[in-house]
Image (cartoon, rainbow, N blue to C red; front, side, top):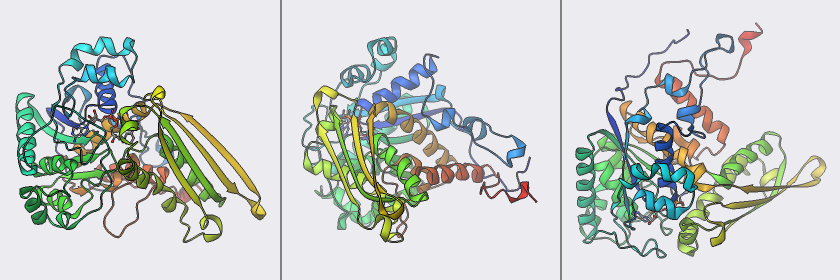
Length: 439
Ligand SMILES: NC(=O)c1ccc[n+]([C@@H]2O[C@H](COP(=O)([O-])OP(=O)(O)OC[C@H]3O[C@@H](n4cnc5c(N)ncnc54)[C@H](O)[C@@H]3O)[C@@H](O)[C@H]2O)c1
């Protein structure tokens, strides 16, 4: 045992952890159904680092590789409880059935448990998601929405006897927006709520409600939401961890696996053309150019920080990166992504790589919701507040401190995540230097 450092003082994960899900669509229902199936012993938590991951501790000769969940104090799956909001009144069973991700054989045995989860009324405006037209929505001003959301959270915490809570945004991608004056300070934001300011997005009101109560907030979509000075100020003030944006699944996951390989081997990239077809509600929402723009920015951002064209102009200085998403209803949640990558090698000779990923969006996203909920709760108990960059592993557009560029390389993100866990528990950082084995 070589624990040289002092472990952080982390409050124990006692009692129930309430997971507040904004949006009860394909991702949320696949997540809840999976947790229920795992609790009933019908499925394994595949894709979840908190449940199936191991972490090496100390030197390779020590052979210490515990499961992550045995190494750090995480909430147990049996202690999770759920609450959600959606613009449609379908309960989690009905919503899962409509989403069509899980087969009836998997879904029917979970019907009783899922039917109990009924969505609360959403804070929603078509100004931000034009393609949806639901009836389960709150009335009133933005300030009134914030008050109603806070009351919703308190009521659920009470009736479901939650000891701790986290909130994860799994609702639709909102229309593209940049930070404006109303997002610059908490005072300006609160004044904006009072004035029903048009630049305040619904997602920011959910985040405001969570952070006002010191509840961690994780953002699974590319909307700005907590990536604004005002809400970061609130997170710091109330000791709430935040992270985002946009779950890293499917095509972008593949991109951040492949690109680090090209850059490690100094292979040039001349072009990367990515296209997708998908037919779920997410695809329908993204069919609106304003909503697609939010997603496009997120998807486009990953290559630059991995390939660093400013350091390697000969290899990556002239790269055409194009991303398309086409809404194609027959495909449902089973997205198909194609990538054509034009690379070049020694003496500039060109080569091509074609990737055809027939993926399942919500199957890839569900374990990320679980890990983010558990790690956000861990962060809170460890008294971490504000931006949690160590959770970049899960996101397409990781939120980072002002002035830093985000780290997109999946393997660097994994190392950062694991080293943060080692740091929390007072274990040595692993540098992979390894001179000691030969000295
Ligand atoms: N599945 C993935 O691989 C993946 C990856 C990255 C990001 N995302 C993002 O995750 C989100 C969820 O994806 P999905 O496939 O479950 O979509 P979905 O359309 O099936 O579910 C989203 C739900 O959010 C609801 N909603 C919209 N605005 C709301 C609001 N203001 N308040 C409450 N509910 C609201 C919608 O009615 C819908 O039921 C999307 O933003 C998507 O872009 C998904």
